[in-house]
Length: 429
Ligand code: URA
Image (cartoon, rainbow, N blue to C red; front, side):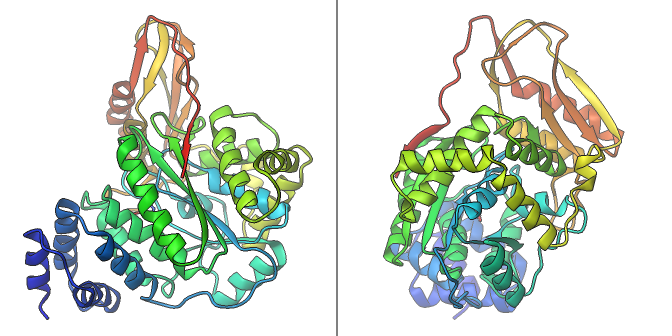
């Protein structure tokens, strides 16, 4: 078999055999296929798509490219996974909250992808936090604390690690088969009983239209059900960033605030829906009861206690967040250029703005400025007077402000008419 022939076959729109797909995935895992051929393959899939059979084969090959978590854990193992958003820090709210209610969350998360952030990068903004635990420690903490989050290890779905970092820098992220195989390939290695997917749609999502988001959700739910999982997908709005903070340490601070009881409405709405769905699929009770228990865990402090326990078990210290030392050296306030109501805050442009301030990577080898990012002052629906602050930009390199400010300004739409903010929860599949 020749990689060249497989790329050409896909480029010309033909269906690949199971053997051909496995050949590519095995070559990505072993390193025998060079990056330039892998990216050509990814681009061919991006343009020509994959049939359901090819997507399933690709997912299973990724899931089998390394070890699987096989050890038995007492209790119900539940996980959530997002298709990627801007300001999406829900995992860090949900995981400790549902763990405080008895679920076991042994989570493998990703890094930032394209204009979206990644949970692992956010966790690494916490001083000392170790996302590279070995397997036995991962299991031990999952069993004893009920929540543990690591990065993609070399051994779990290693093929996805290779594809993910190449897609991030070659504009091949927003493809239904590639996203499905990436997410479900990872999820199937973890042997969870329950999986809840957060499929984002809108300006800041990889799936810009509701139709494509639904297709992605159905593809992944089908794969999960076929593998015997209790699984559902919640379709959520990603037109404006979730919450106010975009950027790693800034988002961790917002998580702490929410877990301490601050009501950041859209962020709490999405976290509540996903967390309650995890509890519901785990047999905890009906959906309303699950919602009430989720909120109670935040109100009575048990979710925040669990978060602190989780951070410290993985070597992290929250001291910088407690004493205000999580902001980058330089800041710039961006002002409204006219008076009116905020009718749009394009999440993709704000994600790119945060990236341009240093909060993410443009190339695989880029180093992240963990304190960089954007903190919104206004959200869609709010009124603003000309000259009022819409957001504050943070970075350690003030030369980056010029481009970032232009990007931020281009993300904002102000209307003279009052704007009503819709619910972030669009559908459950
Ligand atoms: N999250 C993933 O894990 N993979 C994707 O392709 C997109 C989002």
